[in-house]
Amino acid sequence: MGGGQVAAEELRLLIERAERLEEEKKGISDDIKDVFAEAKGRGYDPKAIRKIMSIRKKKREEYQEEEAILETYMQALGML
Image: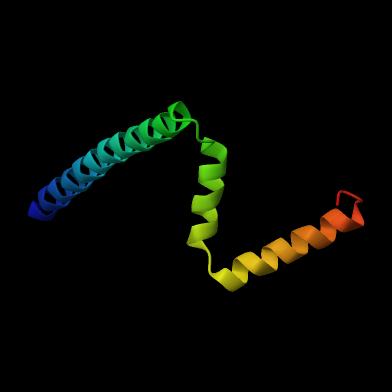
């Protein structure tokens, strides 16, 4: 069955491609950690930077709605 050979080769190529991408992902992850370490070393708060990045991903209306709900809940709990 020649089809089995073709399928095995295709599978091997897919696995190797996924492995390369995993290596690239780890490299990028390490680069991101380095950026946050540099930011911290320069006196910036990495947690605040991550929060800003999270906010920037959202639409303005979505963020404003989330903030309004959070404020409402915090007021109900006497936190504001």
